[in-house]
Length: 141
Ligand SMILES: [Zn+2]
Ligand SMILES: [Zn+2]
Image (cartoon, rainbow, N blue to C red; front, side, top):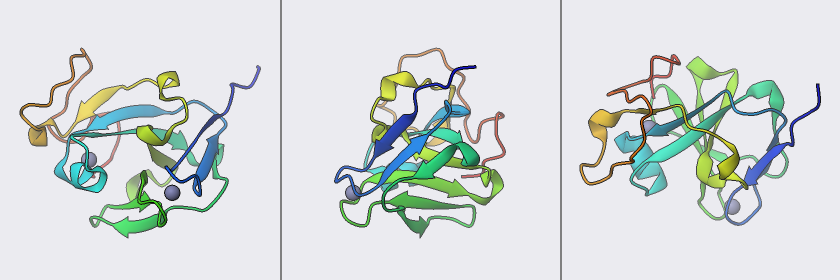
């Protein structure tokens, strides 16, 4: 089987770069208030890469522990939101979709934490919506 073209991305200043050698396991748009604070955006979307298919090329993100369940990764130079790391999903790296070089190559599976969604922010798609965590993963954050 031929390899897919690697998926790459990084932060705004370029000091953090990464490469994944396989397509994401999952894509999600999270409407929770912590993602909103962390990113400054109305919602934050992530793709999950298998840990063994993913590597950091430049600097690794600095991490902020945002809850007992998770740490959030950001660039200590430019402040970009880059990643999330959850103990319960330790076999994965969750990467902020906005940091991908080619975000059109990935797909989103569902919306989570719509119970905290901003009233005026709505995305017109037919994907499943979960008021809290998705049934698809054990994520608590
Ligand atoms: Zn940066
Ligand atoms: Zn969230």
